[in-house]
Image (cartoon, rainbow, N blue to C red):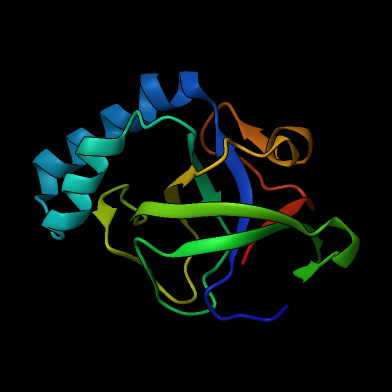
Length: 150
């Protein structure tokens, strides 16, 4: 269950926060700092309202993870360890990542806490809504609950 490309999710951004703050911040920062990764910006523009997708804040990346990364399993975690009895099949793909300035990025940098836009093939797993923090304001404080994509 170890994997350098696993993603440890800390919380999902509420649709209201995405609409009223996140999207506006992303566009404002793109205007201010420019587009460093055109493919990531294009993926964001084409998929910012994609069906079965959510914006997430995640824990540090264990390695650089490229956008487009696909996952086949989801599980609850505690203290950065997967709880084996919670593992479920889940097909997900990272549309793009966002760096600390909320600029679209083609990868999550190893060792950094960043955000991502993830789409779920068969719909957003109920586990996310039931167990993970809904981020309704910024800044936010992560809880002990974690969800792993691997």
